Image (cartoon, rainbow, N blue to C red; front, top):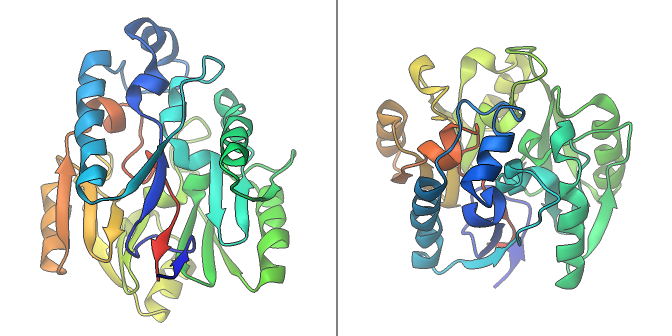
Length: 292
């Protein structure tokens, strides 16, 4: 079986996650951090554990190999959204440099875990460059989309290009809008989730025209998320395999549009682990190997 890191939608075989108990620690930790980190409200610790157990069980049921990022008291509760600290490539991991100040320590911790498992490191984004994993998405094996946002700056994108373009990877930049400002969590994957080679979930009102046209030119059909399901993360959809999707419950219109497009959908309750912190299933996972 041939495998690749260069996909958001091929059959998933392994991934890293950070369980809620490892990231949230306790009710007291949540109480101390949630406001400073711009959560909508304080997650409930025990309910978060219950939600996460159901979320993780789906991967076990699908026979997907799971690696856990361990608890680390030096990191914040945001480390549950483990996609953001690194990018998986066939050439090795790229360690990000976080645009959110409270998350600066996460890439170094992930680096140590990858090294302990003999996973190669391709490179690291260095200051003044910033880049977060929620701002990048593979469109196909040779094309990586990256959002220019408040979390990912021009210097970070330049460093990413310098690592990947010599290896034959096309890096497409999506210039994202100001929207709710610097303190908000607004990544490229807030408005884009590829779920098959020719199908993507999108929120078009915040999508750059040039980038949206590029998706159409590449043959993507678009599942449009309605306005009233954007804040509830209807656009944040994780593909376990082509058109086999995971999403946060509470987005019935988007879920039905996915079903109409020939997808199957597992909707998990994510009030504590997703909605309050602004991180859906793509944010909660660092996908690794997928089959070609």
